[in-house]
Amino acid sequence: SQQGEEDPQALSIQEGENATMNCSYKTSINNLQWYRQNSGRGLVHLILIRSNEREKHSGRLRVTLDTSKKSSSLLITASRAADTASYFCATGEGGSEKLVFGKGTKLTVNP
Amino acid sequence: NAGVTQTPKFQVLKTGQSMTLQCAQDMNHNSMYWYRQDPGMGLRLIYYSASEGTTDKGEVPNGYNVSRLNKREFSLRLESAAPSQTSVYFCASSEALRAPGGNQPQHFGDGTRLSIL
Image 1 (cartoon, rainbow over the protein chains, first blue to last red):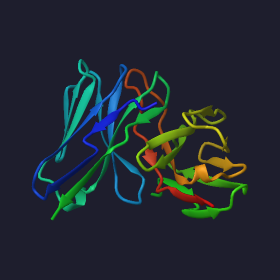
Image 2: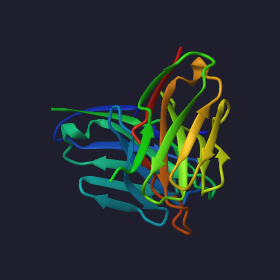
Image 3: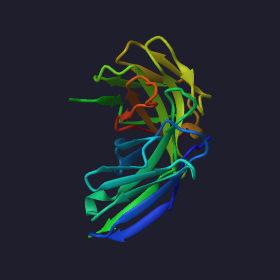
C-alpha cells in the first residue's frame, strides 16, 4: 500500500525558479525521507526529517514537516537544469526496516 | 567506492525461463531490499532482509524468491518468468533500524531492466 503520495505528479519550470512538491502520508512516522531519481538511475537519498523537526535545510533544499496534517513539502530554490529528475518521499512502516515510497513528482527544469 | 552493485544491467527472457538477479553492497549494511518499479506505480517492495539470515515478504512477493547469501549479497530469483514481471528491479541497502530515529536512508543500485517476452 502507498504510504506517501506526492503532488503534483509532474512539474515544469524555468531555470532559476523555485520548485515545490508535496507529500501526504497516512500513519504516524518516525521520520520522512526524500529521494531523487535521475532518468535511468537508482534513487539517491536527499534528506531525512525526523518527526520532532518542523524544517530542515540542505544546500538549496528545504524540507518542512507538519505531523498534524501528515504532510511534507520539498522546496528546491534557484533550480537548475541538472535538478530535472523524479522526486519521491518515503516513510517507515510500523517499526520495521521497510520504507514505503510514493509514486513521485517528475520535475522538468527548462534551461 | 562502489556502493550497491547490481548485475546484470539488462536482460531479456522468454516466458517460463528462470534467472537470478544479483546484488552486492560494500557498506557493511545490515538490511537489504528488492524493489520493482513500473510506470505510474512508484517503487514496490518485493522482499527484504533485515539482517543476515533473515528474509521477509514485501508488498509484491508472488513469483519471486530471495537468498541472503551473506552480509554483502542478496539475490532475487524468478523461477518461471511471466510477462507481468517485466520491470526495472532495484536493490537497496541500509543500516539497521534505530530507535528512536527510525528508518535509515537507503542506498540504491542502478537497477536491472528486465523484459519478458
